[in-house]
Every structure is written in C-alpha cells, then in structure tokens.
Image (cartoon, rainbow, N blue to C red; front, side, top):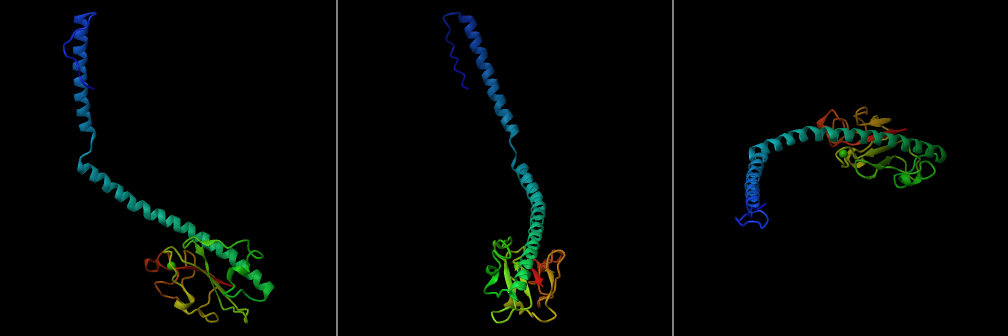
Length: 212
Ligand SMILES: [Ca+2]
C-alpha cells in the first residue's frame, strides 16, 4: 500500500479531506511498518530450521524402520498363506497324476484345475520359485516353494544349496520367518539361507515351504 497523499485538497471540504487523508497516510505507514516487524519475528533463523530438520530426521529414523518391519511382517504372513494354498494344490495334483509337476511344467500344471491362479511373490513381484525332485520320468517325492524374502533377492537356489531331496536336510513345513525352521536343504548356518527376523546376519535370507 502506497501513501499517495500530496497535500492537495478536496472541492467538498478541504480541512476534513486533508485531515482524513493525512490520517490515512499515517495509519498506512504504521501498518506497513508493523507488517515488516511482524514478518521479521515470524521467520525462522537458520539454527531453528536446522534443529527442526534434525528432529524430523530423528523421528523419521525411528518411524521408517518400524514401518518397514510392519510391512515385512504383513508380506511374510501373505507368503506363507500363499505357500499353504499352492502346497494344497500340489498335493491334489499329485493324487490325480501320481506325482508332482516337474520344475519345467511348474505352476502351469496346477492352473486352473487345482488352483485358480498363482499369486506373485510380494518381495519380488514375480512368480514364487518352485523346486522338486520330480522329472518327466519320475513322479518325485517332494517340493519346495521359495520367496525372495524381505531383501527382494534370490538367495536360496538348488545351485547354491544343492538340495538333498532324500536326505536329512529335507524339511516339511515353513522355512524362515518368525515361526519357520531355519535349517534344512543344506542351508544351516549360512548367512544367505532362510530369513530369520531375529538375526541381522540372515537379513538377505529367503522364505520357503517344503512338502509334503
Ligand atoms: Ca533373499
């Protein structure tokens, strides 16, 4: 707001108008000064801003890992629920076909007669991995379903572990996760074996379910 009073008078009432305009001018200047002063007080100093940034950083440092852990927990539950459904489909298939699908046939052999669709691994956004000792000429005796686990990378593979299908390493049930078995399939004591939420060394581990 600019004060434009120049001392000129009105044709109606010179005194009244001049006084009124003078008053307006003074008020306008004071309001302007008050506004500047208020704006100065309103702003933050650099130190205040830095303190706010540090506090936000500390809070984020606490909240983000908790958020990630909660997300992982939900996904782990989903993985094991999916494994249960796929495992039941594999067993139903084995009854009708006297054996499990080979790794080459994979989940395609199950859909749609034994399961409507195969859900994706929430940790890889791709299909779960399926391992079995069944081959075209051999109905096989076991299967293993594997998720990438919270780190989102493939760590447990037949090539890495050398699965012993008939040996003591074969497991029935959940592998990794809060309630899962942490050994089996030649992966005991390996950092890149099954995912153990309590053990940071296994943070890249995978999740699995062995059957029957
Ligand atoms: Ca992994």
